[in-house]
Image (cartoon, rainbow, N blue to C red):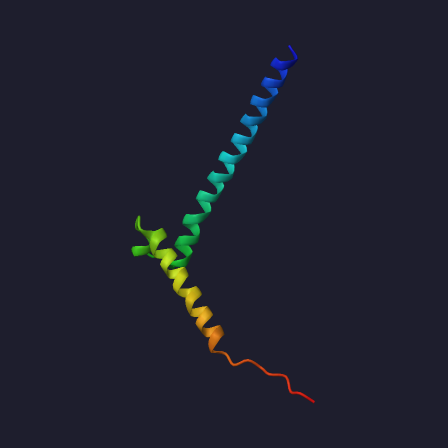
Length: 82
């Protein structure tokens, strides 16, 4: 009898965790399209096509690479020795 209650409580807790995970995934899927629309200015461009994640990834990589290059081009300040 003790084992049956343990099994039922385990299944109930698994169902609650599954429901919460499903709810979390649903909320993140709703946020991504709104971010994508705001980056394109709301216009229908190639970024709203099914290949959008690949394009967005390439764009982020290029932005990161440019930021690193800009940071490397800045001269370092050398403290004066007394």
